[in-house]
Structures are given as structure tokens and as C-alpha cells.
Length: 277
Length: 227
Image (cartoon, rainbow over all chains, first blue to last red):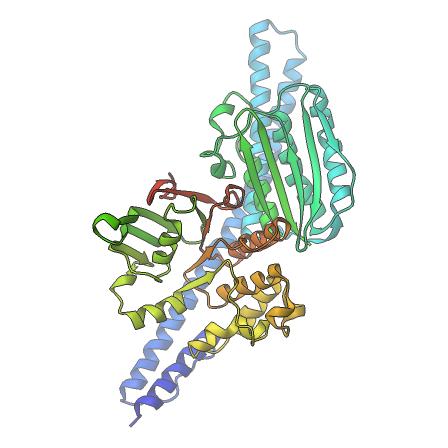
């Protein structure tokens, strides 16, 4: 017979082996311990099976996402093409408005599908970000270049004093994230205003901040703006689907960083991207 | 999943004319993986609230539920053990053991509990907080920010249900504070750790996913996840 101490040691070993996935039944006899071992093995096997099932379902989900992405591309491109061709026809005013609307909505749909696919791939781990040591300076410069045409349309000045600042990030994806934030800044700022970009280095992190003089976000809305499909109450009339900030945050989070937002209604907002060094 | 919940939590100090209601029917709940900040001026009851949440002091009435367990139904000794296993503390004053080196400080609560150290997990925590190069140093050989990083590592190492941080940057300059808060936030995300932080500083509170406001012992905003 086992003493209490021996029994506890045996049970501890069973758990330990269970955690490491190396558990085997020691003996087959009529003792309660032997029955317990069989039961423990049965439990381990069933939890392993359910884990495998989850993995399989995740795989299926990945396939579905990639199917949607592939199969919708061509029809969407065609809709856009035909609406462009249609626009070139001699149309009366009413028809022209309708075609414009079709085209705008198709573009929105295309953007939405692309963004959803990106977030889904980030979340399921299909896309692997590869952060490496980079200079934020070049990241900012290329993002500014990308946003400049839109900013010029509203005569918004983007001010950035070039400064070298090292962090670990994936250039391509981080640029997408920064661009989304700049895009919002331009979208929600008045004409002829200024957007300031600055970098700052800390011991463990580096930070890019983007400040605007836009419409601002109220305190109770602030925690929600990063939610998927959340659109601010004051921006309903602006074009958008509410996925940009969600995607931006996801990209930064994947790289061990975070985005912080501070804002005052009618004064403007500051978005800070923190990335580890 | 709700990790932390209070039900009509009330704390009254003194009696008669000296009666002070430090906490008045406070109700709040925090979800798994959330980073919540409790904000209030000094004397608002936020420290009293944190002490109750951490089981450091018993309420006059009401309940604190950690993972659905009413912690004040436990006797003192059981409560002490519960606290050691389920709650990680980060204090303003770091509270590291001066004679133990960084690594020993981090695994100290695990060893107190007589458990084997999960080296892989602890190694990951140490790496995330950038402490690899100072594992063998003593606390007095570290800067304030570094000491607080050790305290965060120590809180994470036991995989607690909640980390309670009481003015974690109160003794740090603003630049170091930013770093320490960044690490608290990022490691919290990485290890899906629920964090409740107390502060009087608005800017620091902005780091959190949710701000719970307390005034005169009452929770006036943000008590529930979707307030």
C-alpha cells in the first residue's frame, strides 16, 4: 500500500508527465490508483483531440479567408472597370450620379475586403511580421510622401524635423499602420491646418507621435476608437469603414508595441506609436 | 470572462462623530486580459479600494470576487496564501528584497509557495522586460526604473489572476515612467495578464484600456467594461 506521501508524489508525477505530454499508465491492476491512471489518460487524450480539432478549424478558416480574397478580386475589379467605362459614356445628370455612386461604393467594398483579409491574416498568424532594427526616420519619410497628395488637397502642412531614431519593426507593415494614422489626421483636420510628427527615444521603447488640430475625440469614445468597425459619433458623414485604427493597432501589437491616443474635442488628437528597441 | 468583481464594497473607518466612509457601495468588474486604471484624487478612496481588491484589508460590508471566489470568506491564513498565488503586486516603492539578486527576487514568491520555477516562462518574462543582463545584480545596483521592471517581472512570474499596481511610477522621473508603463502594458498584452493600476495622474491613466473614476468613495464612471 502507498503511504500518503508516496501517493502524493505519484500523483504529482502523473500531473507533471501529463503537462509534458509523456504520461503512460504504469501498471494494470485492480487498485484505485490504476483506475485513476486510466481515467487520467482518457482525459489527456480527449483534451489533445479537442486541441487538434481547434487547430483544424483554424486551418479551415485560413483557407476560407484566402478563398474569399482570391475569388472576389476579379469580379470586383470588373465592376470597377465597367463603371469607369460607363462613366465615359454620354450620360444625363441623373445617370452620372448613379454611376458615381456605384463606383464609390465599389471602391469602398474593395478597401473593406482588403482590410478585413489583412486583419484576419494577422490574427490567425498567416502573415508573420518580421521586425528588425530599423530607423524610424526613413519610415516616417516614406509615409509622409504617401500622404502628401491627400494633405495637399486640403492644403494641410505636414511638419517633421528629420531625426534618427532606432527601433525594431517590420518596415512594410509599420508603414501601413503609420499611414492609417496620418490618413485619419488628414481626414479629420480642417483645411490649411498643420500636422506635426515627432520621434522620441526612451531606454526600452521609441515613439512616433502624430498631432493634429482636428475635430478631436471625446473621453468616453477614446477607448473604443480602436475597436473593429467603430466609427466616431461626429464622423458619420465622413467616408470610412472603421477598420483603419483596428488594423494599425493590431500591426503594432504584433510587434510588441502599442498605440496610445490622447484627444480633446475641437482641439485635436495625438496618436503615439510605441515600438520596442 | 470576469476576473475581478466587487459587490457593494463599503469601508467605514471609526465610529460616531469620527466616522469616515472611505468606500461607499463600490461596484466594478474587470475582464480577463483588461488593463484598467482607477483614477481619483488623494483621499478619494482609491488606495482603500486597492487594499480591498488585494485582500490586504477587510471591508466593512460587501464582497470582492476573484475568479468568482469571495476572498473575504477565507480565514486570514488562507487569504495570505490566496494572495500569494493569485495576486501580483507592484508598489510605488518597488519592495524588492535587498539581499537577493534580480533573478532571486523574481522567483522568490514561487519558491515561497514551494513550487518549481517554470524556467521557460520566467526566462520569457525576463527577456520581455529587458533584464537578462542584470540577473545577478543586487537591487541597490539598479536604477529606479530597472528596479520597477524587476518588480513587474516578479508580479508576472507567478502567473497571477490579477496584477495590482499602486502608483507604479510614483517614484520615477517622467521619461523612465513612460518606459515602465510601456513595459507594463506590453507584457500585460503578451501574457494576457489582467492589470488594475491605481493612479492620480490623468496622463498615466490614458495608457489603460479603461478608466475607472472614483470620487468621495464612490465609483462615478467606468465601473463596468462597457460604461
